[in-house]
Image (cartoon, rainbow, N blue to C red; front, top):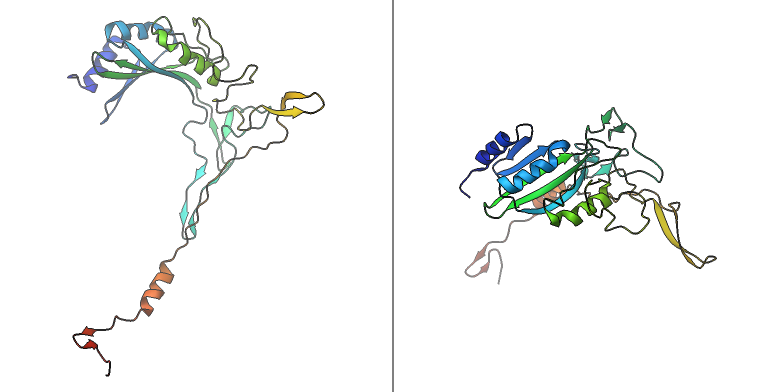
Length: 262
């Protein structure tokens, strides 16, 4: 690969003027963001004109709560601890949905929802040119996120798109067989969405009267987050006191310990 990442990015900008092309230096990772209306045509050009013959992966992304942090990592003389404040993405009970704004972890102010919540991200590989490219497409409608299928461009993307539909609820028009691939039949919701309850929507139990397994809304489980807490004792003072009490080691001479009487 003789062409540098910046030169390759410049070629992409010239070919796709409306796309957003970025280079992460010094790693040389090139990423491109395309509009939904240009997604399929641009991917076809990347395959035929730029030599990206392989689509290595495609996944969905949920940007809800992006840039926020619920972890408090302040360090004090009493030790180091982490805790969760407030209610953020994923910490919802059955039947709850996020409002138009997410509360900040400290409870002050609010964080607006992202302009485009869902995205499809494809990882492309050019074996002939020894080059990789990340291509992103933001779904324009959060209520029904939709990104054109690439099955006719790279047939191997079939199951990847089914997975993104199953886990994120992203629809891929043009897909020949878009149905769930990982979750059970009749599953409610999309488990990789950040507003999907951590406890799930339904619970499974065996009903002795009906003599079968039944599904029902979650009633016996409360939202719970495993919060690691580490307390490190400050032992510097005790160490200093102990060192000050240490006696000097006795001097050893050729005839034994100095001061010994025979």
